[in-house]
Image (tube, rainbow, N blue to C red; front, side, top):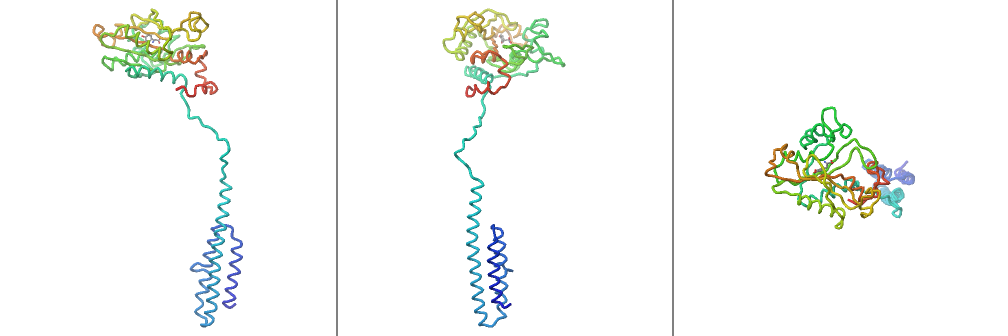
Length: 344
Ligand code: DAH
């Protein structure tokens, strides 16, 4: 075959190759096959040397025309394939922005934790520090140093979880009073929020629940200071008009001791099931720190006085949100919990 015929064959071959090319990668292979350094056209052009001047001119012209044709055709095909690929990509990745999207909640506090945090921050705003202690506690800290002697009913096996190693699950947050007084010198104003444990289970008692403890120790601290601080606290939580009363009571670690009641938030004092027809709700225990407790932590009761208080968080949360069964707080049923989105 002479060179001219060869060239025309090249053109025909190229056209059919191009026809069968469906993607950019194949197109590139074709480009190399025809126009590359070792490509068909290059080798034809190289062989021009063996021709006469006349022939060379003629064949060179044809060869260049075919080369231009190939280049141009490749360009056109490339555009086409790019457009096609883009179209396919758009089809594949089509996003219907009008579809309703699924909302993911970012989460929110559990009603008990929200209440605990709110109560803590009220005391923090009055200058109290926040202290903590372990939930596995020694009998000394949980009982003895709080003036609860070995045979006191509070130590009864029925109330306290005793562990094999002689420790207990703390039954209240009061041991944090002891820990703080051993660690810090007066003046002290602290609260200790946390989990506590008792062998108890009914609609208003759970074996694990939360308390917050408060302690103030300084020179000349009086019962009036106690009343003032608790009044501010209760009015902040339950509203300015909440009726408050201090009722004499007994705790081993305070003397004198009191329990604080608020007017029933359900019946407004008229009498109902929640307040057992009394019109009052017990909210917390408190009193002046017993000198025996001061002695246990080497604080001189002649020089210092103090007050303490403790309250259960679940009870406050239940009253505020009108929850009648404490177990609802711990079942983790989202139908219940989702009602508290946005409270804290
Ligand atoms: N620790 C008591 C309890 O769990 C509550 C309490 C009462 C704490 C009087 C106190 C207090 O600090 O002064 O029932």
